[in-house]
Length: 443
Image 1 (cartoon, helix red, strand yellow):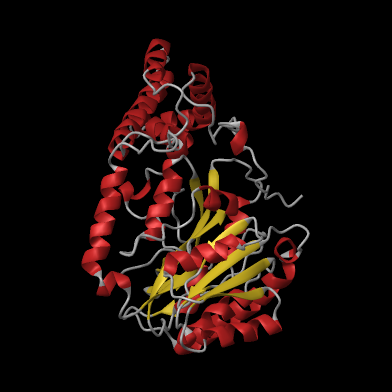
Image 2 (cartoon, helix red, strand yellow):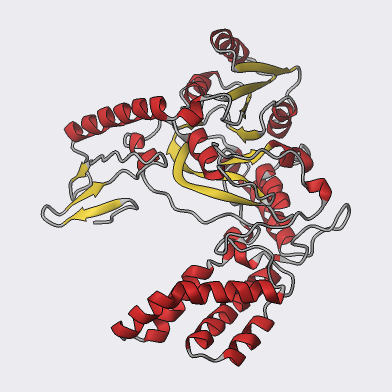
């Protein structure tokens, strides 16, 4: 039997038990859903899971003071482009209204719909002042609708949600929590996992937000140039979105979100993961990826080719100006050099340490966005122990010391000016970049 992430086998019964991940507020809510070996959910247990889910969300709504307090929580602008989405829009907007991060505004852009889309939105706006309607007289397309909403957004953080998709209740809260206390100007935002669902949804979907969905921080090097996440996965700083001009309205073959994320990531920004699933992407017949597959694939191929080509210098030199392949190669070399420096340090070979560190790329902070120095040190020390338990225990005690020495050597060598392992902060690239980015501290 295949066991999904977040699931542990019950040895006594041969069944799979799904365990709820703990939340950041320190509360531990345990939920179990018993699944038989044949994969059929016991419906009585499913009802119990749903009741526990409801109770947990009610408690979290009451106790999430940071999310509820308008004075402390950052305002989020949720932009919903909609064109003839009357059938699905109510579920979409209900999912926004139920968010337990209450400091948001929802801007619905009606892209010249011929159905009751505008009327439906006006009803929400009358009942909840956080909802408002922006209307296009002519149908201008998805990118233009998103940009129109972003133009009038008041929030310091911005996210998008297509009118036929929807969020789970912690979608805003989790992404804000991932950014709390992080004032690094190179962090452009955070992102959540997205669950693809058929048009009518999934029967086990209520479990999705409670499964751990571990993903690494997204950088330009992530996904080997592929699209890093769907359009409604990231929560981005509004100023950064506007700095890059939003979505390209001339792209009619799709991939307009991929194009924007690539431009932002190439300039050295990165996105932190919530390690959770926060929304659903509805797979519908007639979508651009299915109906216009050839055009969509050609556009995607062009974006991949752009990533693996030198950056355009039309306006300014981006942070990652070399082809993506160059940085992937350099990353492999950096990992190998860290390994050499670690093992040399364990052997007391100071000359070897110096030689390895000297070969690191000069004045480059980006490798430490991707490489976890602590993990690399532990893995290589374990390799050095070669199965010797006593030696492994000795190296484990020295791992932190060796890690700090390597990081200090890297900084002294000028190879990096930031390393999360050392807890240091980067220096601003320019005065223009040090703008009024919000600080997500709860203090």
